[in-house]
Length: 261
Image 1: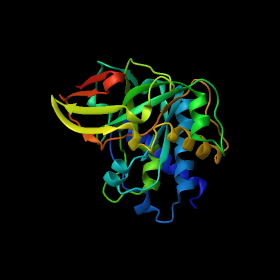
Image 2: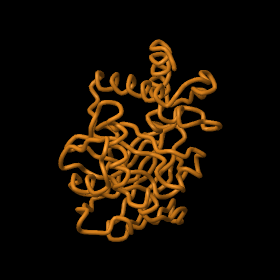
Image 3: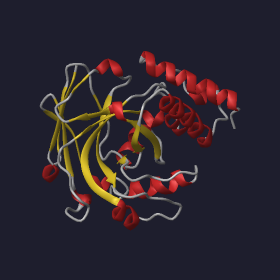
Image 4: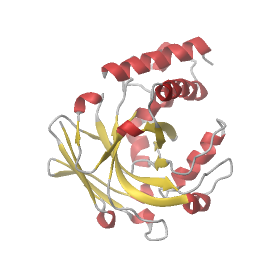
């Protein structure tokens, strides 16, 4: 376990890396004994500092929920991070590439909660009952820790590599569509790079919402009404650079497009 001073120092390093759009050495290389609980403590210190600076929490992201993502990262268990209001874009947005480090895009569904959701015994049915609507979303990854050799401890401390998200316009209630079969065709500059189906996320994308409610209950929290939950990617991450135009076709749930500038 790390000391409170170590946790605060790492949170400082990550905040500075975020400010300067830079990358720091792996936490697990510097502190081999760091645990998952240490990494959530680091994330919590960073989160509280961001809130104190005036940023507003709008939801949480879940990562590493699909086999595609676990194989892409070598990490085999989900994690979560937090999302702030200044990281949310609409379809058609122009996104400044320089805001991020190691910029990649993932295909996801996001869920808006109509009521609070608490663990530790939350089920998929509980999650579906609490969800107001689903909306397609692209997540922009933003990694401040060197990628080579990283573990889940490094990723969690780095706010689960969350950078931003781009939301589509199509909203569907969970009883209006079989969310397992929502498709995605992800293209860069007109060429399809990744395809997937939402069932790749734990068999049903809303299963991640139930997992998150149970996980945050271990940290004395619950998911609140109005929160937006980014449920995890059902494709591998796609690298993007300045000038790239990204488009994702979600079939019955519409299209998201954005451009990196």
